[in-house]
Image (cartoon, rainbow, N blue to C red; front, side, top):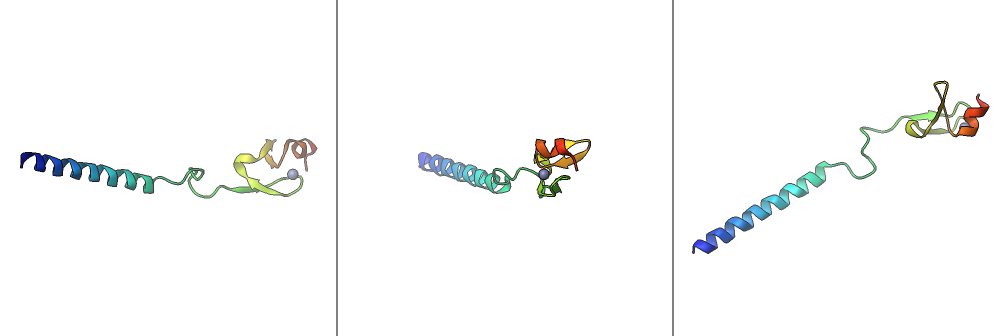
Length: 74
Ligand SMILES: [Zn+2]
């Protein structure tokens, strides 16, 4: 009888741990979306193509889509 109680307690703890892990997984944002909110899209100052701010090539405070356009300027 004593072992049955221990067994039930162990099962209960395992279920609680499992439920906690699943809750953590749901709370975490999916991989690749770790940024808070949508990323700002900026136009290239040379050709006007829009790209995420983190992928811009910056030259004199202006965003460009690639190093070539940054070299060419506006
Ligand atoms: Zn460009």
